[in-house]
Each structure stands twice: as structure tokens, then as C-alpha cells.
View (cartoon, rainbow, N blue to C red):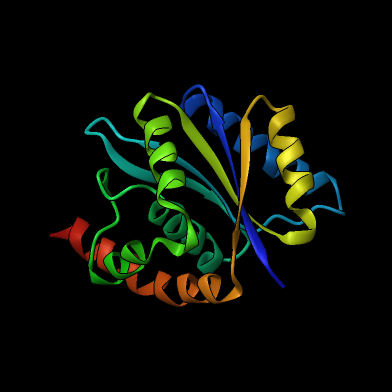
Length: 168
């Protein structure tokens, strides 16, 4: 079953954090909505991409959405996640067109932040509508099952690399 990355851009990280919290609450109260991978994508004070406040029921899915969101940003932006495993995924582009990656980068560089949700195809439109209702400018990108599997498989190695770098 195909998945989609639903990205919704907000004026700043605080607004994106609030929207992510609303999504998590919506997931808890509505049995028809089951979101397992939510992340907030923004630039840190040094202009490097960071993905935080991942909300997920599964550590691997949470790590996977973080890796997926970081990997869709343009190469020109520094990325907090580092290491060979991440570099390999990042260079593949994960199916996004160059102009999409550049537009995403421009939005982040202008101070905006994005909420990213890895959603099953059947729920992507519902998630996009909810994020738009919360004030985001929303877009969706199809992601193949192979890409999702590759990101999920690489996530533990990337997390270990990042942890090792943080301790060094």
C-alpha cells in the first residue's frame, strides 16, 4: 500500500509545534484516524535542518519519519542528522523532484517550519485537510513502499550514528 508524506508549512516552529500537538490529540480522540509518524521540520539557530518532536507509537516509525523529512530537504542546507547511512538516503532524493526540494528549502530558510506526516494513501487527504484547517499550507508527495522500507531499515543505524556523534 502506497504512502504519502503530507507536508504543511506554518509561519514558524511554534505554530508547527502547535499543529503537530493538535494532530496528536485528533489521533487520540478519533478512532478513524491512526497517525503513527509525525515530525516537525525546521532550521536551527545555525541554519541546519532539524527534525524534532516526533510523535509516534513506534520508535522505528518515529525515527523513520525524521529521517524521511530530513532527507527531502535540499543538499545546500546543513542537516543535523549525519553519517554514512543518512548520506546515502539523502543523495537518493527519495523520489522528490529537485524543484520540490528547493521550494521546501526556501520555505524553511524564510523562517517557516513544516509538520510532516507519513500517512497511508487512504488517509493522506484527510490529514492534509486537517493541517490546512489548522492554518498550514499543505502539499502531499507520494512515497513508494520501497522508500518507506529503506528509511525504516536505515533509521536505527542513523540514530546510532547521530547518538555517537553527539557523545563525541
